Image (tube, rainbow, N blue to C red):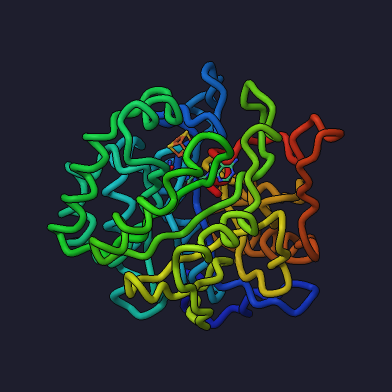
Length: 341
Ligand SMILES: C[S@@+](CC[C@H](N)C(=O)[O-])C[C@H]1O[C@@H](n2cnc3c(N)ncnc32)[C@H](O)[C@@H]1O
Ligand code: SF4
């Protein structure tokens, strides 16, 4: 199946603008044990389980992409660690690390299950993970995630550190919610030896509320930070869209992901697979191709590869995100939990 196609060299993935696609993000579930205010509404309808790719199918999909030159795989969701038997998939995919086909197998998580999973992730060959953490105050944490518990996530972070996983902390900057805590987040992350990345809210999916109330341009955050910290531009990149600065006072790195105020599409190297097998070509556009039907149609990957090639021709030049008071609808109707960010 996925590995069978590897016997002969298949053409690497390049889109019509000449961008090499080397990074696949895979959402393994749309479910989550949190209901973050910027990501989900409180009452979500999740996909029926029968629509999900099985773990075996997810392995086959990811392996097909690895055979086409994808070097980095990020497992995300929803919350990836709430998918039943997720470690089976991660351990299985790790064979591509061992073979040298993949450079990196990584995970984005809310941290709620890390206490349990951190050692197994490290043992499987996962070297780095991203943990989403927007605040260090328990009451705020509950208000932002609606269902989450800060202490549990901090225990998860400690478990990841103890297991020897390299951690990056992702913080969504939210107007009027955690904007007064960015300094504390910097001290916290850098004090523990972790990079911190700030993310702007993106208008994706209905979330019971007005997004203009949440949107805080990172250009504003950055200008404010410069009053108190010495930010030095550095060329450091992790293969993602974050632009990094070095903070002289802490010696740590701070990243900014600014999809709205800065366009990073020219160097986009990624595509996103949903848990139902739809391949989205851009986080901010609807262009997508169903890969589940060709995967299920046959045991060999010929139809799957043909569908992946069709998808490459659809990758748009860039996104059209806008958040303003005249645009009440989300720029894309699907929630971030469908494509995993
Ligand atoms: C969709 S989550 C999936 C993985 C995991 N549940 C987590 O929270 O890390 C991935 C990332 O997307 C971010 N995110 C979710 N909705 C967003 C939005 N509307 N705008 C910007 N970032 C968002 C989250 O904060 C998280 O860092
Ligand atoms: S951001 Fe992550 S943790 Fe929060 S609701 Fe979305 S998927 Fe769940």
